[in-house]
Length: 331
Picture (tube, rainbow, N blue to C red):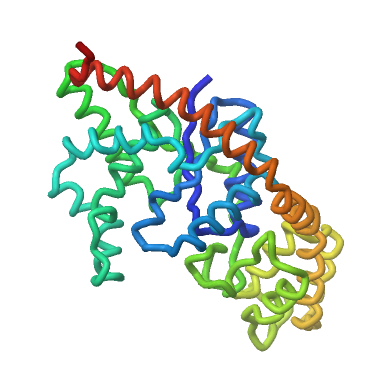
């Protein structure tokens, strides 16, 4: 059984794209692998969140991933800051990470360009902390998107460099876990690509959104003036709506509106009203679970404590062995 590590941003709520894409695969993976899912609250400090927002965001993410089906008895779900061994490994890896390679990281250059007044050391060494998150459990598989592949390559670099420096094949090489065809891609409401928080609040439908909010978002979705010839190819913004309908609506409903489009009889208002109601029905069970778990403070505390204990058991073993390899030994 291989070890899998995946970080969950502590600043993001789950939207339909997350849920029908990666999260459902995480739920399957917990039955097949030794999974560690952590909420990356240390990573969020690069943007200087206030204490109330930080705590609230961590709770929101914990609640939603539990509601989505991650089982704390099968997988280890924990909060990054509750495993101090990660910070210790981060320190050791930083000693062998060089300024030039960190400055060449694409994500660092992007952050410097977008936020020139907040170029902090945490941004520069973000790949090192990510490497520590992975290597602390000696993971071999890491589910990441394209935007994180360079960071994963750097994690391999830091692990291999540690092995060479201390002449010890201690850290295995982690590789991207590719969901390939199993990963469902959910389009956004703006017609420009996939659903995601980075594209703006109006682009995504969140699992915790109320029915009223879902209706407003869907009704504002981009459309055109309608088809001008029968069986016309749908433009991207219209195809996106039909692709969303494939996920949340019945096949008969999808076929009905597809036929109307091909006959030039489509009324986008009716299409969007139907799509919104189907989204509300599809997300209702998740919304109910989110509300129930969010109000159960005792359960959340138990999950947090249990996850930290399990994660620290793995992390402490790694740190003990790393210290001995480096030469930190008690007299």
